[in-house]
Length: 435
Ligand code: 4AD
Ligand code: MG
Image (cartoon, rainbow, N blue to C red):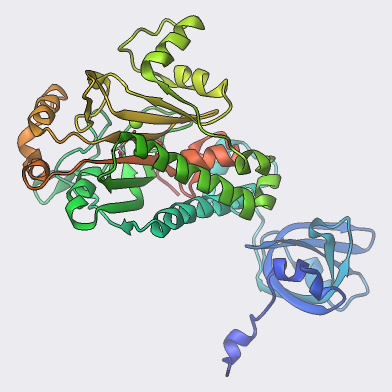
């Protein structure tokens, strides 16, 4: 194969390749960025980072590369040639004895030095993302989304995309973003669900991973105005199997991360074994949850919504994901199916995760569009805008169910992050939409 001269210059091994012992004592070329520069007793140590890892390089004052080693700055991009030597003290177990440094992009003075407060770092997120911790979180995020696709594709699901501009809010109760749409009012989607349901007679088993928008002003550690929503809708699937589907995918993703992102988990101080060996997720009803809360001294009454404090109490003491099922109908969205044994509750479940609270909202869907209309009116929605949705029950309805999971919340749990804002590259919140 003929390699163009221009690209030949940049051919190099990745740092993780170099750290595989087969390159020991060989001369290799790597490329990346200077994560840290240190001078000590006539030597310059550069910690070089690429997307696969970090390696320490060492240049002595009598080496040919000394002038470049002196000139290079933190976060400069470079190509470095050198010999790989084993050094158990170095990160990754190997060190590169430098013979040549080519500076590709000499960096100006790196602004992240002393001030590492979360607010400062978020203000320069485009730069702070380069830090090791942030890099590890972004890798795990990619693994989580990859795992979601993998799980449903291997189970015969199709990927379906719903529009982002919608004529109705979609998820009553949640705050909407209204947008001008050529003289009319449209909304940014809060969920793919209503359109997904209309795809049930077409594809039967579908999923998506896409952004959803909520103009929620609450500045909590678990809310974004734009979050990534992993949603699934399954024809002929009733409530008990829905719970198994949700448990199945969450367990699959946890195991995948435990297996494939072990060094990232270690860097973040998380124990991969916990995620690899999760026992069956406990399941309790809303009614049982209220009893448990009251016994613990909470004032929550039957019919009250569960807030973060209540959710966290129930899930944190179990140290495991927890399903809460059969919520009161009046607390939940218009599209949820009433329990035939008790119409005052719905066949719905939220999955809670430790330290965070709600990860997933789910339900079997109502096929009684007269009742759905009534509930839309109660939610102060105009049923006329939903005629297209009612056609689903008019023309060949089948039982179906589905759920929506917040990607950032799952990443927050897996990585032990303090906030969902740290679990997406460029978070959108009521006070920040730049960089
Ligand atoms: O519980 P929600 O509102 O459910 C729905 O939107 C359903 N239509 C989903 C479905 O059945 N297809 O949202 C689902 C999940 C929540 O459990 C939460 O993890 C996440 O989406 N979520 C948010 N994540 C970050 N920031 C926000 N503002 C979020 N709002 C919801
Ligand atoms: Mg919910």
